Amino acid sequence: MKTSDLEERLIDFAVLVIEICENLKISYASNYYGNQLIRSSGASALNYGEARSAESPKDFVHKMGICLKELRESFNSLKIINRAKLYNGNLENLEKALDENNQLISIFVSSIKTSKNNNSKIVNR
Image (tube, rainbow, N blue to C red; front, side):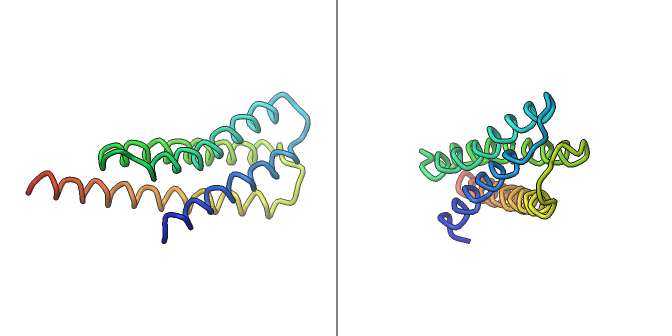
């Protein structure tokens, strides 16, 4: 996958989250988890832009790790919203967001692992 494709997926995911949050029930819990979800999903896309401009391989891994943390936070927020039945919209969108979020987590775990392995090969030369 090209880096620009991954960036587009992250942006599309953040937009999907915004659409989901527009259809949350009106409650304190919905407001809290919706705000948190918007921040973490958007942060993963924004931090990926930073990772693409990393100053070193170590900096790249660090910034990718931040993206991964934000994606995991988003995933947990989506699960809480789903289990607490805070969402009024089409459940297919919520399921799509959970699936895409899970796929993005897998991509980042793999990318970080590969980058760490590549970095250790450079250091051990």
